[in-house]
Image (cartoon, rainbow, N blue to C red; front, side):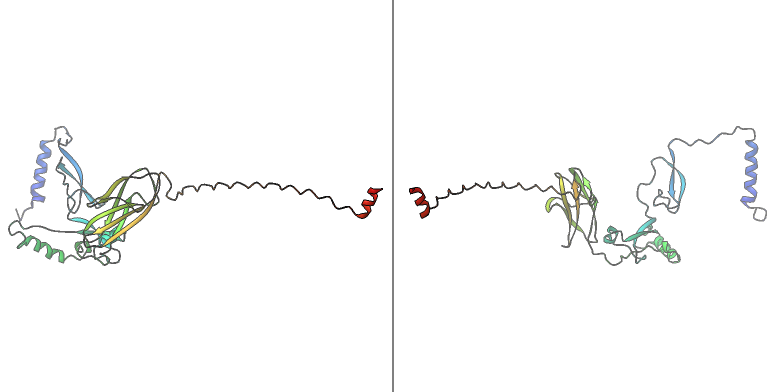
Length: 275
């Protein structure tokens, strides 16, 4: 057959003609998807469920067999704005001083030798080295500024107004291990959280409050953030100042004028009286 035809140019046309002849007078029946089958969008590179607006492809799978883990192959990593070839540390991520970049990560285990002599990975690494595009070379080191502790309030927002029942949620950006996060309202401790997600629930009376979240890292370093909120009041509300009570005006008593003493009579007046 090598010198006559290939499977595509020889066998396939024969098979097609035979099937068309067999179905010549048969009714056209539309294909029905079997029960228990579903159509989903998959990542075109990895085959994991679609994510991060990457290019996709449609696939039919058995219902319930959709992978539930995150895609370990086609990923977006957070890199530094100033150094795109380095990962952004959590502190810079918390301050939004980063951007997401597409990368491919190819990791495989050797079914025979395991990690001692992973021949699968050696072959993959050799092939990756030959690729010039940056997505094939994901960064593994962090850029500068990684030891900072950044605290951000997710809820409530700064200068917002809330009801009496409040859930305070914070995100912490730091490279070190967090021991605890303490929460304060007008410098009075209202709770603490030791595990992610860092949050507490509390009840505050109506008024204006300064909320503070203070992070204690296991190495002794701390960081904090303060916002201002109003509980059933605007955040800049001020209690009205009571008007001062006016002092009574003192009553002034009128002092009676003294009765004038009779003026002494002159000598001429006496003489007139004698006459």
